[in-house]
Length: 103
Image 1 (cartoon, rainbow, N blue to C red):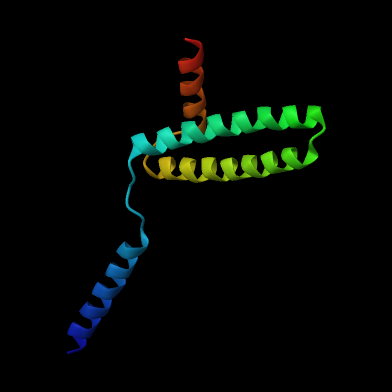
Image 2 (image 1 turned 180 degrees about the vertical axis):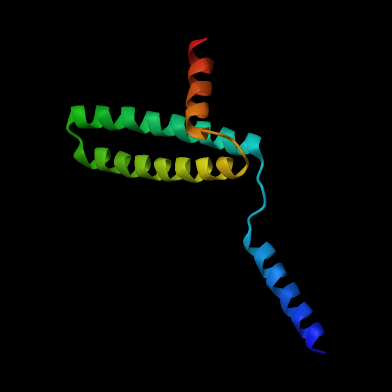
């Protein structure tokens, strides 16, 4: 009886451990999301610079909030890609964007 109880406890703990781990995502989709977020962040920075130059502080503040949201998305996408085994996902995405735009 004691052996059965210990085995059941071990089974429940194992099931609980597996339930907490997140499944590996799709690398291709995650890297695409990362590239899109980086492009959005760059566009928002350009917009913010234009707003500051024009003297529109309210719009510049809104763009700053968008930039912060994009940075948060970039960090979460990079974390997901690192879990999937991609080394230096942000640097890799930036290089891919550069290659696509300039070559």
